[in-house]
Every structure is written in structure tokens, then in C-alpha cells.
Length: 92
Image (tube, one colour):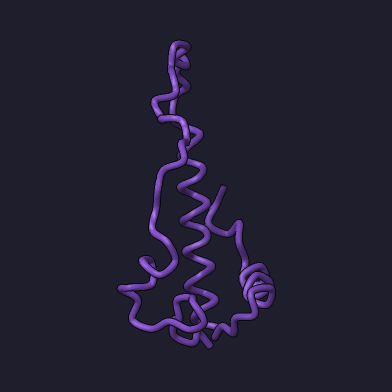
């Protein structure tokens, strides 16, 4: 895939979908970066295929229920709590 696979219109379309305002210089920069990223994906086609190991086994242990903290113990080290829950900073 060439660098011009993603044009400025596509960048603006994606930005609109994400509700992100871009300046023209930002759009040009992202256009180039998207082209680079797609180029990297194209390079994956050059990786040779290998035979899959047929005798692989799952090394993860099975899930098992174990004792854990109760709610009060879990909240003991919290900086701030409210009504029995962790209280975090306002995001927006």
C-alpha cells in the first residue's frame, strides 16, 4: 500500500467521527503517519510463514476461587471514599 492510501479527506472523516478538530497541518501530519502505519502492515506480508507447533499446551492454571479482601479492607488505603466505593477525580 502506498503512502497516498490515506488522503486528507479520510483523515478529516475519521477526525469528524472521533469528534476531534484538526488543523490542516495536523491533518497533513496524520495523513503521512497513517501512510507509514499502513506501510508497516504491508511489510508483514513479507514475513515467511512457518509451520505451527502441533504439541503446544496451555500453561495457564485453571481459575480457582480464593479468599480476598472484604469491602472495608479494600477501601482502607483509598485516598477518598464515598458510600462504600472508591472516589476518583472528576474526569471532565
